Length: 145
Figure 1 (cartoon, rainbow, N blue to C red):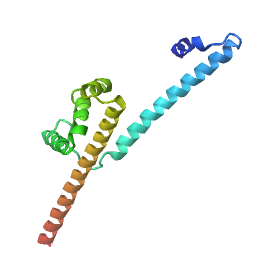
Figure 2: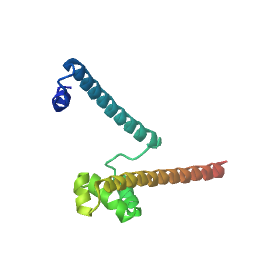
Figure 3: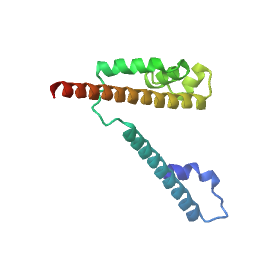
């Protein structure tokens, strides 16, 4: 809150009460903090809602790594490259934009769309594996019964 007041000090008008100005700056800083917290909570909920509710491999699992690499190959290079630069190499959006000669907003959009598409491909593979498992179980039950 103190930083917000300091940053907004040039906007203070001496013909108005200081207490009112400070209250407005504090209120706005609180609103921004709540907005940021709300956005973070919505992101966490979105990730939790899209996560498959089946047994999934552990993050260090070689089979998962292999699957992710296979799914990445299905993405077009214009999406795959910014996604890899961001999440594998750890580059910031401005760096990626400069390297690929794109605007920063274009890079953010490609990374977002790429992550969404990768998640969709992953969920499709999980659903396909579940269908195969169910078909095998049904065939086994028919043979036993």
